[in-house]
Length: 521
Image 1: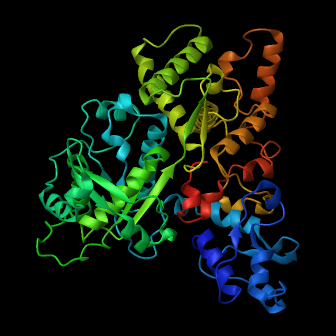
Image 2 (image 1 turned 180 degrees about the vertical axis):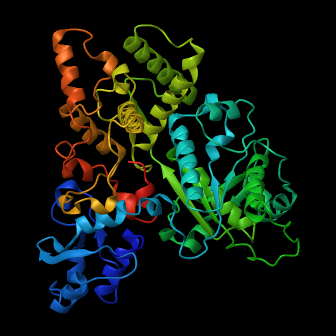
């Protein structure tokens, strides 16, 4: 059996190389109805641009069908279809490679080359919790998720701003968001002197508001970088204030001085540090325009400002049947109250004041909020339903539903482990003894689909069973059900058909970190 970690990136790279020189045309298929027939597709329009009449030479098709190489998934067939050139993998072989070396896919893949450190900037954290809008809360949670993901894959990440509001650390702790607290303010003298030199003439400025030093024009920078850079064409000038200079000073210091670095030399040449890190600004859509001003002003006032600055703009958050003024703390309190209420209904008593349950309810509330905020791609609009039914375990779109099924799985595995230790069940067979030819269906992409598949399967086959103490308790019908459940062989071949097994494998299980895999959806 071939060894080595399979990768979507490696497979795509080999497929594009096989087509010859030109732009990449292949993409990984993700739609369930298309996955029945193909795993990768080179669309017909792209092939027509590459080959003129769209007819791929037979030698190229043969090269694609026989594709091999490090990290390249084994190919079953390649065929021309109305949609384009379709490629299907040898799925049993893919599953065997993945399931036979799970640890290799759980551990982060080593980066192909050293990458620059990343400065992650979330301007929403400069406000107080009570002023935090839901769209800003979304940006905070996306930034936290991104930081954790990047660090899990070996990237060096620094977070700014350091929070200064005295109530913000407590609120972030409630949300399980790990963010640095305030340190000493960065010096602004150098930026202030440079800004004063760049200010427009006094006669053009007129009377300035209090705290405003003057106006700096940015149109030249916008034109210089071009519209392809994504800047708003309406950006023409920026009012420079002491607060804005403090923001720039903190960004400047964070970009120049990484933990463990020696202090930057005052005689450093221009652009000496301009490419040493990448800056990612995570902002709400309401803050996008202002953050573009900050980006351009930084470039104008600092010759060593990072050349690579990206803007991750989070879309708006709309709330059905609630005022648009709902703040982030109010949203948390609402979800927390609903979790407590749902628990009281289930257990028949109010457990909110029980110290043993306090932490549980807090964790469930935060998990529900994060699932809601991260379940839609960050750039898209998010619509929240705040009714009590929105956190029901009966629905299939809530974080509560996912956590409910995670608890089912945890109970299943824990019950199996205890029973195996008591000699009631055998150990799992070695991976090498499994018949992977049974595995033909596509994999799940996201937790919701995995939970739906497991819930559907569990509703048909109650593999969790009933404990011996429950046997004979209740009605005769209940006793019969208990006997039926406990008499079934645990995880028998009849119960675990290939469809349910395959649909429990995430599609990202054999791919390297990429934007699509890390986009919560």
